Length: 333
Image (tube, rainbow, N blue to C red; front, side):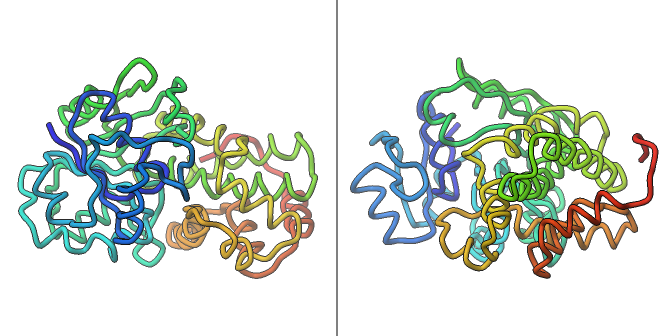
């Protein structure tokens, strides 16, 4: 099979290199024609994955029709909020029989669609062959061949197994699941909790606070996920607790970095302006806040992250609110 990766950010570039190492023919599609030319000329993604060479066998293009027609599997690595705008031309071409693999981790903040739902809506195809890939997987580490494990979920396990075989190698191990909803929600909502963890880091709250945020944050992810039809056990896996640990703890995490800068006293607009990469958790915070209201679920940490990011609440006031809430038993759904 041939594969096209749509989105030449760090993750799209890292996966293109991985697929090349696995002996597949790969096209890497970049939205910006000028940056596509830069990638072709220098074979290095200076903005998003510096110091990693892109093999010359990977074809880099800005031509979306070329990328679609070339491949059997279309890997969607574009940030969630840009998919509908940047990839709307996909519906103009023959996509019948092609597999769509989402590796983006977000929720569209106006529709509240996960990426699989977004693609089905955008392409007007409820029977779209689709899978999602998620888990603790920094592009910087995968591009260096550091051992990584992720999960691929599809309602059709045959598709999940196809992706598993194509992507797995000696440093990248793929498990399978049929819980698309849980896999997507785990990968998206953990970014909100990572922002909370970063805020705690920036505000110098300490390890106790961060551990509490991660643990209680996972409880919030599970309660919302189960309410939305996900399987609880999914959140104990790679796209749940696994991705939460790495995103809340690592210096490579963009979402944790955003929170840290907020905790240090910067405002959100300044932080975003200074970043080249997209932190999916910012828009996912809006979506999660709306989902909590839609499903009438109390998500106190997510609510306080929203207040800090968008209503200028101080991290210290947010912590005070969380610590003074009515006392409860630990486990409840």
